[in-house]
Amino acid sequence: MSRLLRRVIAAIVLLGAPLGLAQAPITPNTEMRMLGASNDVVAYVDAAQSEILLSAYMLRVQGVAEALRRAIVERGVQAYILTTNSGLSEGASYGKSLALAGAHVRSGYANAELLIVDRYYVVNGPLIGVQSMPEGMDPTFAFTGTDYANSLVTIFVEQFNAATPYDPTEVVR
Image 1 (cartoon, rainbow, N blue to C red):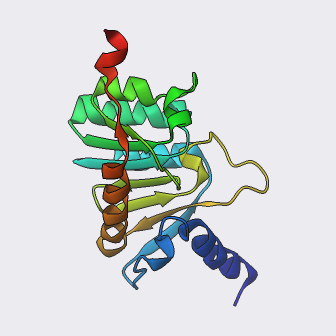
Image 2 (image 1 turned 45 degrees about the vertical axis):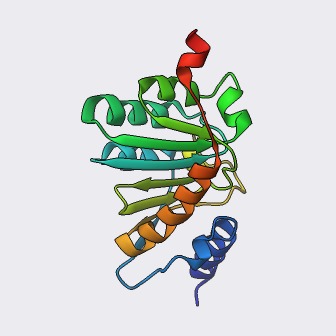
């Protein structure tokens, strides 16, 4: 087994264990590729037609936030965002503005950087929350396949439902 393949498998197990990704069914129909920049994540958001599920510690990447806003406002995509209390309240966060744009935002236990698009594409890794890959950071992977995505949807929905809803109108009042 090549060193790169061993590192990819190790990364999947290490990244996936906290959210249960290691239990998600990677089948022969599941495609996987490594992403190199946040623009790669933006491409998946831009492909969304009906639903985006996003779990992130922080919501700081302008390109990802702008792509989410376009999806919500221009294409009518339903966006569900789970972040931490810090990820919602810090000054650099796009969480509040995305809620004003129409995203369903909640704060709570966001234990992974995870993006699920149309229950088919899955992006997992730090590029959801950081602009580029600093040296030594775990890689970000994209997966394609309904079996894999749907197994993660169940976990996301449980965590989302247990989190505290954010109401952007309370800030405006």
